Image (cartoon, rainbow, N blue to C red; front, side):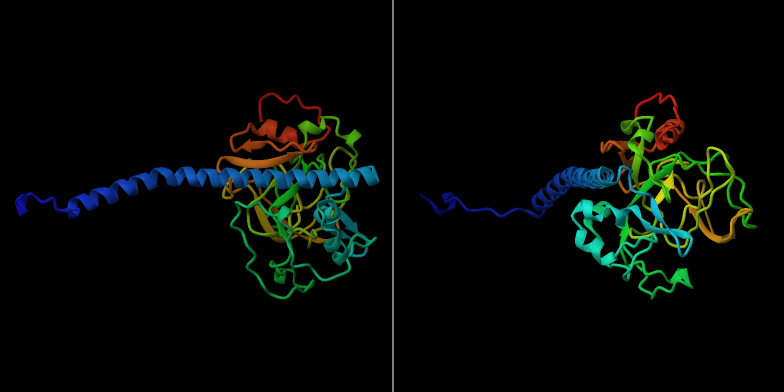
Length: 325
C-alpha cells in the first residue's frame, strides 16, 4: 500500500468552524426564550402561591376574631393609620417570632424598631425592586424613612375607586371621594357576611410594582370620616398597604395617578397629608395576580374591562359582572 493511500485525519476548515458556531448560536437563540419563559412561569406560580398564603392567613385571623384583619389598625395616639394587615397576619404565615418582635400594641402601633427581615411571602420573585435608602428614620422628617426595612410587593384592595374623577390639586383642594367598599382599608372590620358580591368575585390582595414599600405599617397617612353616605374619605398613604382599583392594571403613570406631597386635607380634617394614588401592576408580562377573598388567585390581564375590574374591587356593590377575568 502506498503512503498516499493512508487515511489522514483532516481538521475543520475555518469556514466549517464558523458554520458550526453559527448553528450553535441559532440553537441557543431558539432555546433561550423557552428557558426564560419556563423560569417566568415558575416565578408566576410562586407569586400566586404567596398571595394565596396571605389570604389564607387572613382567613385564619377571621376564624379567631370573626372579622377579617383591618387594612391597618387606627393608631389612637397619633390619630393616623397604624400597623398594617401584613404585620397583623404574620402568625398566620409562620412568622410568630417576627410578630412578637414587632410587638403589636392595643393602640394600633407597635413597640420595637422597624424590622429588617422581609418574609419571602411578601415579595414577588419576578420583582427587581430592592430598597435603596439607608438613611436614619426620624418621624419628624418622613423622607428619611429607611427603605431597607420590611417591604412588600403586595397591597390589600380597599375599594373600587373614586366617586368622581377628582384629584388632589397642587393647592390642596380635594375634588372627589374614594370608595372604601373593599375588603381591606384602615380600621376595617369586614365579615364574610358583608361580602355580598361573593368571596370568589371580590378582590382581596393584588400586586404592585412602583418602588418599595414597607409591610409593617401605613406611615405618614391620616384617615377621617366624610359626610354620611356610601363613601368615606381616606388618603392612600405613602406605604400602600392598601389601595383601590381606580386605575387600569400596569397603567401608564404619566396618564394615571397622582403624587403630591404635603397637601392640605379637606374641610373638617385636621391634618396635612402625603398622598399618592397609583395602580396595581406587576413585573409579569401582560397583567398581574390578584387574590380573591376565597383564596383563588386569577391572573388579571392589563386589558381587562375597567368597569369589570372596578366591580371586582367592591365587596357589596351588587354590580353585574359581565365578562371573564
